[in-house]
Amino acid sequence: MRGEKMNESIRKDFPFLKRKIRGKPIIYFDNTASTQKPQVMIDALKDFYENHYANIHRGIYTLSQEASEMYEKAHDKVAKFIGARGREEIIFTRNTTESLNLVAHSLNLKKGDEVIITEMEHHSNMIPWMMLKDKGVKLKFLEVDKNGEIVLDKLPSLITKNTKVISCVHMSNFLGTINPVEKIGKIAKENGIIFVVDGAQSVPHMPINVKKINCDFLAFSAHKMCGPTGIGVLYGKKEILENMKPFLGGGDMINEVDYEGYTTHTLPWKFEAGTANIADGYAFGVAIDYLSKIGMDNIWKHEQKLTKFVLEKLMQMKNVEIYGPLDWKKRGGLVSFNVKGMEAHDVAGILDNRANICVRSGHHCAMPMHKKLGVNGSVRASFYLYNTEKEIEVFIKHLNEIVNVFG
Image (cartoon, rainbow, N blue to C red; front, side, top):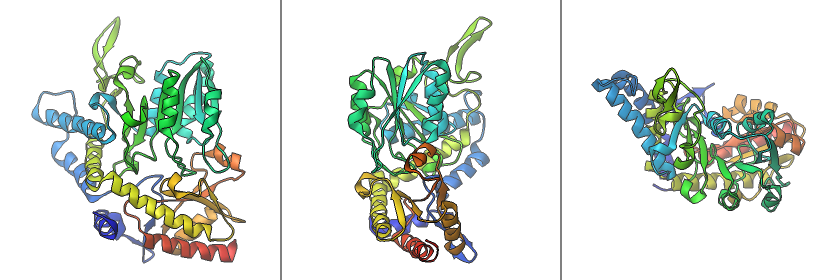
């Protein structure tokens, strides 16, 4: 599918687009926070609870075996989607945040070890590493320049013999910047350093292959890619996961237990303690099927087209400050901005009241980067496969009116 026909067909798949508020349709531009859900995923979730539900890995009866197979196959689908070797490298968590916490707390970093992250990180890829300061782990930051891009040339100077981890976001949820993860990964590998990628904003929008990136870990969330809430993914290289201690202990992650100790289950169940989020895991696999059928290349090209269109419009407007690269080729499908003289929340509120335009306002869990730029917050419009240029035109029309009246 291509162009407008692709978009028209896709929009029919999302029931939320039929809803109106105050007699007007919804323009949903908050896809960086979470995406809307296609009917096929909603139906799958309903069907699982109605016809297939049972606890997994517990019973030999047919229903339990059936549910176990459906849940496990979802791991296989995710593995194929990102180019992993198999389900043993795919751990289901609650979300990206839990995935990154799992890595930070299971790598067994010690006093004197160093971790490098970038200045543009989401709090989810910052706080878990900061929490290790209590153990004597040192955190270093790779600089972000005034254009919203990392200063890659400075990375080698941050690396010492004590550097154990480099962790960075693939695509910034605030600046929209797409970081050169393959280059960063190459530097990490040359120095024997673990490389962790926050893929929350890249995996849902563009083709991703973990072998090509050569990352040791990749974290992302289902709810940002047409799936349900409550399911996240941690991809990890098998050889590394096998040598890591579990993050959580309890049922299902064990092989044998006696009064002296325990042995762990095989991967990935070693890291999935307790009763799993079975239904949402299965429904996530259905969402993966949906995205794969459309094609991640097609989704990415569509978002690039929208990003180029909105940037061109915003750059023509007076009193609007845009954050991140102005070259659409260097960023993903979002744009953060401020109207000079106005609070971000006020702009977002007016857009909602006038035309049901759903945009995010605030610091977007990237408070340090906002502080560096000298702003309290920003307005963020972010796009996905069901958004259109016509919606952007409505957005620009109302934003222009806001600028002319209030800015």
